[in-house]
Image (cartoon, rainbow, N blue to C red; front, side, top):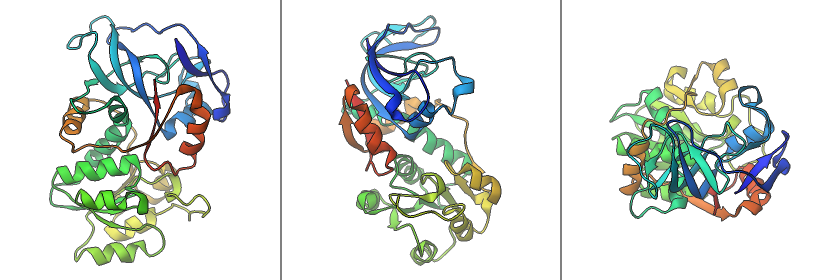
Length: 316
């Protein structure tokens, strides 16, 4: 099969497309014929060697979330059949991962009717992170939640989940996603200087909790402007009055310094719920552009710009 691999750590320039053996599913795994593979910032961390001490030796693949058709079942797998359309996380502890013609999956759910493979492959990481963040933050129905960086895929998923749970939402976002966020029921304002005043003007009462989904340091679509230490976390603390009422999914260094919550334990126990909500149109992660495997360098350049405008997808 064809797959993207890298033999050394570094920038995306080390990634190559080559012919490799198909992976075989182990116990509890399935193999799919990949139709779409979502790209995330985590892919570039893997290529850069962030998890080098926790994974087998090189070569390695990339691509952490996929959708496609079940091709083979590992020992002990039940409830799914060859030919089923599924989506979920791809394994990445072998020589290939999701960016390949065939990929292994440790968890999955069926793709709902009316949802394309590209739309389904955009869901797993954004949905899992957003769902977990809301749970770990402890936000309750009727409370007012500020989602900072709601124009990101995780941020928009968090807004959608929160509104579905009966939580009131103020979202900070740039012009690209502002109208879409308002359309689903969030109050939207711009991030950057004066954000605290703009948020306060939208609500007569306090902000109960705040979720930071912005890229590390609070830099959103402004690569040419340096962020202050801690990004926007001090502003979120000011608005909630308590660092324990603020959670970040990205700025862990500043969180440790400021006493803000973090969440890191990935869990895919809600995949069927994500599928249900996607089928009902409640959960949507916008797909900005699609690429073929041999266009990985072009896709990586846009992804790393932090201005992709939505999910970037490899299609097969």
